Length: 217
Image (tube, rainbow, N blue to C red; front, side, top):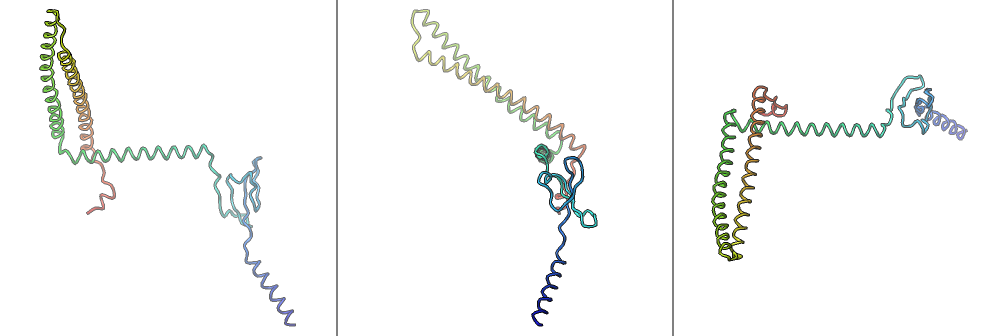
């Protein structure tokens, strides 16, 4: 009698456990013919497409987006990289603007700074040009000395010839220096022109303070 009761208790317990197990979710997909199909398992050939989950009453309970194509993934990556590059440029520009506004109090200050830089460069050019003129005088004197020797039927010695080539090299080196300084002067003028234009724009339309800066006491 007790054995029979135990078997009945086990049967009732098993039935209760089975009743508590939720039914497998029904999944729906669209087949190659455009027809909607549903089942407990999505066929492998449709596993990458969009699927929906419904309960036994037909109500949608979930949705799985389709897998992205390699082209879409590449496009999203390119878009993300482009956005990151644009944000980097914007951040760098904001930093430059901040330095510009903190460095100068007015356009007049910028003009004075520009003129000072240019004056220093032109001073270097003038000093170097005067030195070149001196070197040219030395070169002409040595060349004249060598020509005088040749007119007398004598060959200029090795030291004189070496001196002539050395002075020519010095002249070339200093001429190159002047050329580089003129390029620097052009660059300085261009940079200050751009900075002054940007400064004027920033003064007319001041940049908005960031939220982080606004929170600072």
